[in-house]
Image (cartoon, rainbow, N blue to C red; front, top):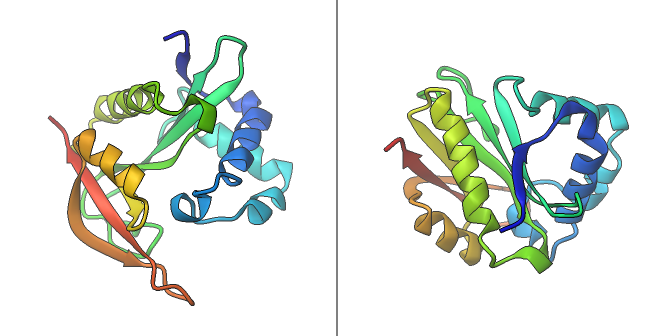
Length: 181
């Protein structure tokens, strides 16, 4: 595989923004992400600069990892956030232990099925374990069968936690967890 797997750098915010906007235009984006293309597009550059800087190499409590193609193009990404015990997560649930939370998983359509997701997850989990985290979790839409199958293959198991998205939708998000080996 001739792809470079690495963490983003703060000054790469335009590429991070571009890849996120591309992800939000994917046909299954409504199942994979909690924001729309229009919402993300409306955010100022300062948002993207702060977001990328906060998940950049060597910063600390988050890490965005990308797969960079031979021509320098970004073709895949995932981010691992550190959640601290005693806080509340994005859905208002209490965080009971210091843990990682995988978010923003995306592989460009033409690069799917070649192993990039596995390599990104390996890098993300290595980063999480190196921070002393004992558990990593992710949230997946109940109708996103392809993602759920991959997460199980990667060792993540359903925890039984279900997040209702509310509103006009009866959609639910399922928590999957992986304990440190």
